[in-house]
Length: 262
View 1 (cartoon, rainbow, N blue to C red):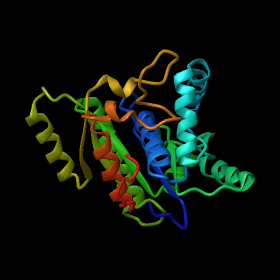
View 2: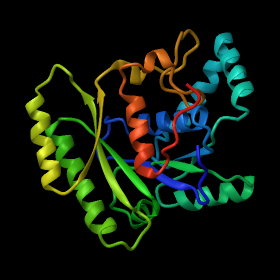
View 3: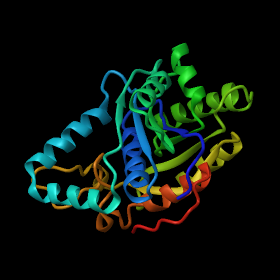
C-alpha cells in the first residue's frame, strides 16, 4: 500500500442518525490499519456522545475478559507489528487542531485520518472542519426523510465548498446502506435518477441490511465484525458488501494497491 506525503483527511458524514456514519468510520479505519498496512487515526468529534471512543473502551474491556480475544490481539500484533490506531476525542470546532496537536505531541504521522463528524453545519467552526476534509462519504438509505436530508446536506457541501474550490474538499460521494434485497428495485432506480439529476456522485457499492454490522466484540463472542481493535472476521465479511465498498473508496481517494493480507 503506497504512503502519502501528507495524510488524507476523510469523513463519513450524515445529517441523520442511524444510517451508519460511525459504524463505517470504524470499519474503514480497521480494514485500512490492520489489514492494508496504512497508518490510520480516527478523530471522534461527534460531541457529546463520542461513540467511537466509547466503542474503543468496550473493545478493551472485552479483550480483558476473553482469553480468545487476548490471543487474537497478540497474534495480530505479532503479524502486523502495529499497535491499535488512536481514537482522538475532540469537538466539531477543534477537530483538525486537536489532530495536529496529537501528532506534534506524539511525534506521529499518518497516511489517512478518519473523522466522525456531527450532522449539522450550523456552526462556523464545524464548517471549517468540514472544509478541511479531502473527501466526504455519505451513507444513505431508501427512506424519504433520510433521503431528503442527505441530498440537501450533500448538495450544500458541493455548492458551498467543492464548487467554489476555496478549500481542501475535493468532493462528496453518496453510497447506499441498509439495502433490502427483497425490496423494490424501482424505488432505488428512482432515487438514483434523482441523485444523477442533482449532479451528485454515487458509489456503485451497496451495503445490505444485515445485523452483522451491529456485531461487536464481547466477552463471549466467537467472531468480531465491528471493532476498533480488529478488522472484520473474513467469514462474517462474506456477503456484507464491505470489501467492495472499501475497495471503491480506496480507488476514489487514490489508494489503489491490492489487498495483500487476506
